Amino acid sequence: MYDLILKNGKVVSPEATLEYDIAIANGKIVALGQFDESLATRVIDVKGKYIMPGVIEAHMHCQAPFQGCLGANTFYEQSISGAFGGVTMFMDFANMSKGDSPYKQVLARAEEMAESAIDYSVHGKFVESTEEAISDIKKLSEYGIPTFKMFMTYKKEGVMSDDETLLKVFKVAKSVNGLPMLHCESNAIAEMNIDECISKNDMSWVNFAKCKPVLCEAEAFDRAVNYAEYIDTAILVVHTTNGKALDTARRVQSKGLPVYVETGPHYLTLFDDLYKGENGHLAICSPPLRTPKEAEELWQGLQDGTILLTGSDDCTFDVDEKSMFLEKNENGTWKQDFTKVVNGLSGLEVRLPILLSEGVNKGRLTINNVCALTSTNIAKIYGCFPQKGIIAPGSDADIVIVDMEKEVTLSKEVLHNNISYCLHEGMKIKGYPIMTISKGKVIVEDGKFLGEKGAGQFIKRKINPEYLKKYGLN
Ligand code: URP
Ligand code: ZN
Ligand code: ZN
Image (cartoon, rainbow, N blue to C red):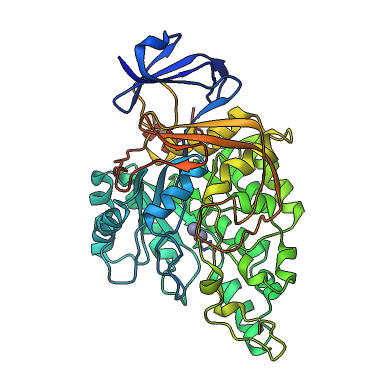
């Protein structure tokens, strides 16, 4: 007897879309084919709908102290918001300051995340290369954490890794089949420009983006790639925003160097004109939003395989946190000072809808591409495939059902992310998740959350060494 049969759906993988039933028992997919309804406790007919592996979010910052802020959601609330966007597993980063043990910080973070309703994991983070810190790389990978994040900027915030740290982490990560993850922005360029704005007393929202132009990101991207080439190791660059960086990636990917690239939904759909508005601070993130030209370059990168990953980089700060260090002018407008605004945007719940609508329904991507970009490739590169990221016998029954005809106008009211604004307010979406299943249990149905606090489990990860030797996830 099965617990659940999904009948008549169009089952999506990166390679194909095929019609068959899915039989689920004890949280796992146990068989694919055609099954009699009498064989299951519950049968859901999903005729006309698409069945995709649950979305995996490998890039978010929840309850992460940063620039004096923390974020609006607990991990449980974050898992609810994610579930409405089809997310069935997420990963966050260890909180790190100098002197902290990366290993201990990962364990502490995993404990915090245990209240999640969906499965979860943690990335290590490095902010220095002391012997103790570096020796944690092996311990972490043995514990099931093979991914290590480093920031190439945020020196003043105390979390930047210097070049020596990058090289040391690259080298030791390579020896344990680990994968360094990089936030690429040149601290030197950003800091010089920011200091100039401060000296001119012009810290407008618009100037924030000017301080961190494409070259600020592309220089750091280039440097990280050169170091990866020197050490001959794999790296993953998060939240890439422009074609200049992608050209660097193309140059080395074509030689087989495993440089993996992620971009996020906000860089595809939101632009730097938002910084011209009074509430432009709500759109402050790093790297900053760019122009439609860069967004087109990203779509091109998604189409030609230069970008194999998407991540939301979700930072759910409400207006009060985004504004908490700002003052107002006499006329009630903001005294614009980007140095006092926490960086980061919310995006966990809208990543799949945006890719379905702007990607598939606008003819830029296939639904199979979106499956790879939101789930299969993420599971592969972060080391939880085939437990996650695929609809196949033996895999966890983490599933999202999608209605490609469903139309939704994005607004703060339709999202579940606990904040009082939506940067995509008014954006018309066609193609939306309508049901989310986590380990065989329906957790979102008919607009209701049915999951359970604490039902998520920590997922140990191990990356297939083939993905780290040569570019590509096949
Ligand atoms: O602006 C951003 N992206 N904030 C979160 C931290 C980071 O840089 O990823
Ligand atoms: Zn970042
Ligand atoms: Zn981030």
